[in-house]
Image: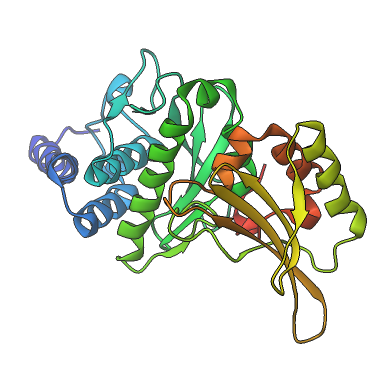
Length: 304
């Protein structure tokens, strides 16, 4: 085969143009400080195919998958909330960045690809392999994994950090969700927003008496008193200092008994996840009866 020097030089030129466009995107992401800009650049990075380059290649030690760039984009959003410091750490011999949030010094997070036809990514705590949220930047979706997050707040690393750290982290996720919502995202962070802790609907209707009775028993074992609600409310209330957890029943149009949680906190600093962290008996009851009393959430996108 004859070697054509001119054709070779033209292909090099095309390859250099590919990498120049890639460099422009990465630099833009490093400088972006507006939500819409971060999201737009990240979508372009995810869609970019560096392998259009035929001759030139990025050395493997400097090539990072989409999960890495998703983590970088999320850290940019986290920094915009200005609640506490966020670090992007790339451990030796790894290809995906870890996110370290100042409020949780003993926990690290990363993004993994969701096994869904629609795509998207899971934000996970690494050591416990517990999901926090699902982020689909293409289809504009951000959903909290209520099941795994309930388990995460009970882990040693989060318990050691304390309730104030959990408060900061919940505010951080809520603030990020607001940024995304302002950019036409579908958001579901049920129970996380400290300004929206009432009307948290349970998955099932017509609960058996056994379920609520068992919570009365478990609370009493820990010297907490669950009492019946008054003033035309049907259900029970558990008081923890100045905070009240109300479990309320009402009837829908078909006369089914519909149940919900109301967290009453005048300081707006306590959520149902705060109570899961602080009241193990409540978390254990919730997990035992999850199919009945669990919060309604976007279950379909969370696949094990």
